[in-house]
Length: 189
Image 1: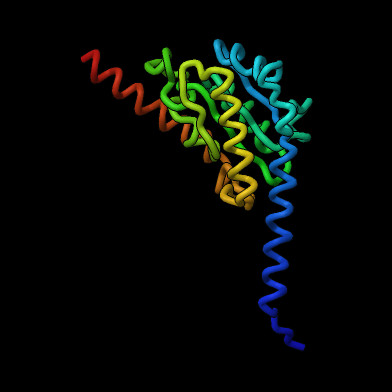
Image 2: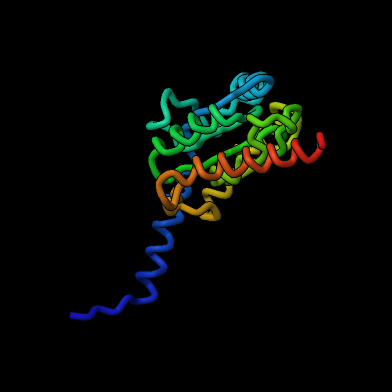
C-alpha cells in the first residue's frame, strides 16, 4: 500500500525536528581539551558574573556523556590522537568548538614539526572563537552562538566519519611531516 504524505504531516515533522533542536540547544554537555595558556580563560565563564550554566552548558565527566568538544591551546601530533579518540567516543549529534589562534595557525609553535597548524583538517569544526587568548566573554558568546546554530538546525547532525579508510589519519600526518622536512631542508640549503 502506497501512502502519500500530506503537507500537514510534513509541517508537523518539521515542528518536531525544530523542537528537538531547541531542546538540544538548551542542554549542552561539554568536554574540553586545554593546553598551555588555553586552560586560563575558560573556567571563569562558569563563575559569576557570566555563569555559563544558566545557558544550559555544563562540563561533562567523560566524552561518552558530552555533546560538545571544546579545544583550546596548541595541538601537537600526540595530543591529536587523544582528541580524535575523544571525538569518536562522543555520541551523535556531536559538535566541536575551537578557541584560540593556536589550533588554527600553530600559534607560537607554528614552525615546529610536531604542531598541528589546522585542526579543521582532522576534526569537523562547527564554530571558532578567535583570539589569543579569547576572553571569557568571547567564550560565552561562542557557546551562545553554537546553541543558536543548533536551535536553528544549521549544524549538520549526520555522522561525520573522521577517516574514510583505515589508516588515513596516519597517512596525513606522515605526509605533513615529509612536506615540512622538505621545506626545512630547502630553507637551510
